[in-house]
Length: 126
Image (cartoon, helix red, strand yellow):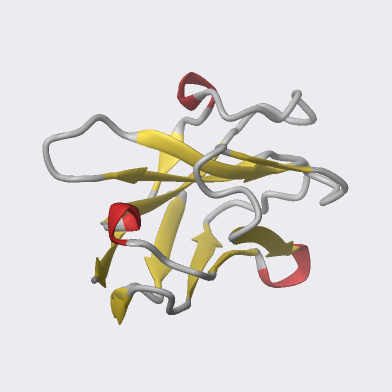
C-alpha cells in the first residue's frame, strides 16, 4: 500500500513561516514528480508546487512564487514545502501528492497526480 503522510501544519501569524513534510511509504518515488496542493474552505483544490524527479526543476503557482520552496530528499523518501511570508489567504488544508508515472513531465496539473495524502491544516491569522 502506498501512503503519503503530511506533517508540519499549524497556526501562525501573518508573515510567519512553516515547513511542511511529506513522508512516502510503500513506494520509492525516485522517478516521480511530487507536488503540493491546497484547498481552502469553500474553494476548489489548487496546485501549489511540484518538483521534477531529479530535483532539477520546481514549479510554483503564481500566488506562492518567491515565498514557498519545494524540496525533496530521495534517500528518505521525503518531500518538503518551506512556506515563508505567510498570508491569511494561504490558510488551507495542504496535500502532498505523487505522480506514479515514471519520468513523466512534471507539471502542476492535478489530473497527473494519483496518490494523495490526508492533508495537514495551515492557518494564518492577520
